[in-house]
Image 1 (cartoon, one colour):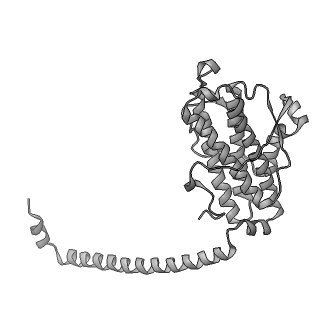
Image 2 (tube, helix red, strand yellow):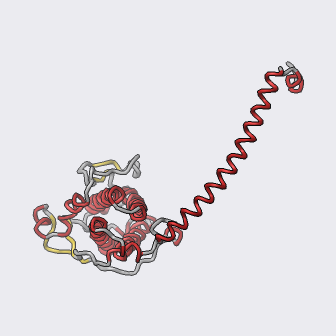
Image 3 (cartoon, rainbow, N blue to C red):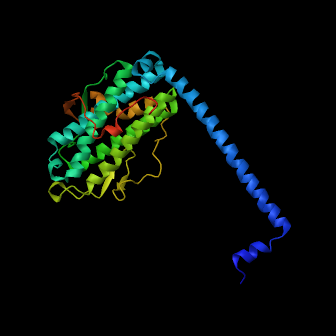
Length: 287
């Protein structure tokens, strides 16, 4: 076998010319790339400046809010108020809560803080409170672990689909980005709620092997992250989300759905503390 230097020595003139051409091409590409990078950098600076003129402030979003945007945000506030109320009562009165591992408890506690933060952010834009402050739930909602987790996942399914409506229909890029950011957190909550099922102790009917969400199908908790893509539920209008949430907010609809109408649970706002400052809201553009 010839040594490498011998192979180099016997290259044809055509091969040498080809190698030279390749070197010239790569050199030219590098120079072009550097120039392009500089140009993109300058363009990015210009775009950033234009975006800054738009500003990512809550005041700007409030002053330029369209009716269609407001409708979505008010629906989101209702959903977030319902979420806060749900997590608060799971933590405060559900018998199984103190028996699940600390990390499961931490998820539920953290989720409550995050949902409250979402509500306040949306309220800062609409400058309106949620029109519903009392919520109804199915019978045995907070006393039976299976029912609790079924409804929790049902609600998170609805919230995910509702924020995807926002991604689809919000009129501004900033609101669409914000909807996507919140939707990602609701997806976290859905997965973590399914994790809890396997940790429910026998005393409270566990371990729970399957959970039924908004589509009415019992799904195995393994794996808890069982979505390759988030489910839109084929919702294209925020009215579809409001229809799904109506039994939780309206007495007659709750009664028709077989919910427990003997008791309603109040939305009790508070000042949230997010689990990690790196995951806090920065601006509507996300930067």
